[in-house]
Image 1 (cartoon, rainbow, N blue to C red):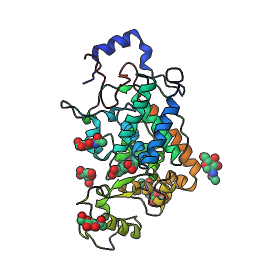
Image 2: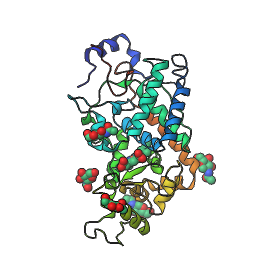
Image 3: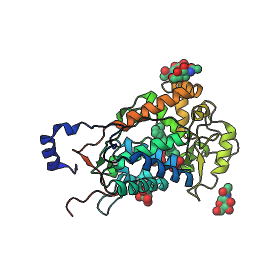
Image 4: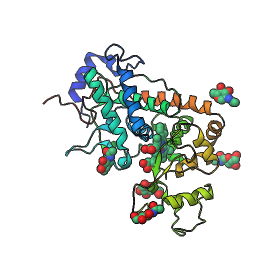
Length: 331
Ligand code: HEM
Ligand SMILES: *[C@@H]1O[C@H](CO)[C@@H](O)[C@H](O)[C@H]1NC(C)=O
Ligand SMILES: *[C@@H]1O[C@H](CO)[C@@H](O)[C@H](O)[C@H]1NC(C)=O
Ligand SMILES: *[C@@H]1O[C@H](CO)[C@@H](O)[C@H](O)[C@H]1NC(C)=O
Ligand SMILES: *[C@@H]1O[C@H](CO)[C@@H](O)[C@H](O)[C@H]1NC(C)=O
Ligand SMILES: CC(=O)N[C@H]1CO[C@H](CO)[C@@H](O)[C@@H]1O
């Protein structure tokens, strides 16, 4: 159910231009002049205190924007009546530090300019800052998004790729989000930072016939790497927290090592490794492995495009006062 209804019909008939999102890089220059400075300050403090924040926030951004555009729908907490996106099954491992970061930025901004800055803009701005902070490219971002009026776990299924999907399926999911194969390969380069829980790749390294056999190695994987991962994850069924770096060589640095890893059998997830084998994706893996500037340019452009698609406007969104709750217009 769209929570907009008659209210929107009225607004649309009166102000048809509202259908068009009006994003700009200086959107808050008059209404919240300290926006950039405040955001960067909170982001910097948090990243220093908790260095896993960058990867966690980038993944949170990705999951928010894949499901109906960047609209902060992922930040809404479930209520007794309704399970929201962040509690959809696939979100189980979304990191607490990233949610905490957004709350901190929102709190700081509400003190300076109440009811002005949207949660979706905060998530986009924080992601952009963090990518740069861990060594990645400068991304041009525009602001002016509104936050969703609706978050529903049922809208998540089928919109996020899983590591065991076929490349056809993954390409089609990104295609539905308006992204080309090249843009997809560039964005997945995000796996140059962060980590994955063992359960996400256990089926690759523990094959059911040769459970702990020392020399089992999935096709395309470096055999020493497979053995190391098996050791690292030996306890994963007992300890669900066990996890491995996505990029085993430079885990905290945003660089093009992810693609070099794929070329040498150090892809962690099945989907990572598959990107290096598929004819449609492989040329871009080779390009980005050879030329980090080409990767950074493509990543920055794809992030900019991705962050501006299907953006909510006054018509179907608002500025939430708390990022985890809808505004209460009737109370
Ligand atoms: C083929 C498509 C993709 C698949 C199947 C996939 C799957 C996954 C999985 C299973 C994890 C591990 C989660 C965990 O265990 O906690 C992960 C981590 C991550 N993903 Fe992806 N992903 C994909 C594309 C992307 C894209 C396009 C981005 C960014 C734009 C992204 C950003 C991240 C980041 C930053 C992490 C690390 C999170 C952390 O350390 O907290 N992924 N991904
Ligand atoms: C893929 O993994 C999910 C759980 O992550 C599982 O439910 C599903 O059955 C798997 N699909 C295939 C084809 O293996
Ligand atoms: C596995 O778990 C057991 C008990 O929790 C612990 O004693 C052992 O050190 C763990 N091994 C590894 C490799 O983490
Ligand atoms: C992929 O490329 C290889 C090597 O160029 C070729 O042999 C194979 O037929 C191609 N497969 C498809 C599906 O295009
Ligand atoms: C690397 O990519 C950049 C950006 O696309 C390009 O300008 C440059 O010429 C490339 N460098 C090499 C050595 O190919
Ligand atoms: C970060 C977050 O909100 N994760 C939630 C994902 O879903 C599980 C199960 O519903 C919740 O327990 C987590 O809190």
